[in-house]
Length: 205
Image (tube, rainbow, N blue to C red; front, top):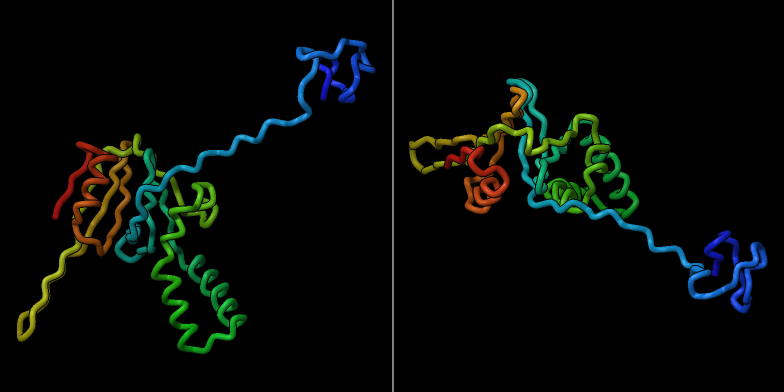
């Protein structure tokens, strides 16, 4: 216990504080137990969308758009990040003694599910992965455009027709963030974007 007047430690059987002399009672002492630390509430990730960030005609970088309640986090899979992850995974595969085929399968599985990690990764940890990663507050978004990916193919002499999916953030400051993707115009994606952006969304199938 501690004295509520001077803060010094008090023996449990003491009647008076040995430091200041205050009588020990219910109002004069405090339990010697610190309150539990307040844990920050992790922001909920609503959806992780796989896309490619289009900077120019010749510069395209794989990217995951991590949708949260009030913002989106852009997690770019830059060449430098890919190289570092490949080297790390290669070392793990060697340490586990996997052969070529099992190692190749492990590498493919790793990259095919890579974006899933962002469902449990804090915003600051995502931003620390690469300097190009960024936060897009929904309050700064003036318009959102989504067009689904479509593909038509047939046998014989007929040629296949492909429409590339597009996603775009148009910000209030005039900046536009453009992405391509290979997701169809699914209802769950439309419902999510409508809930987050309302009338600012232009959704095309």
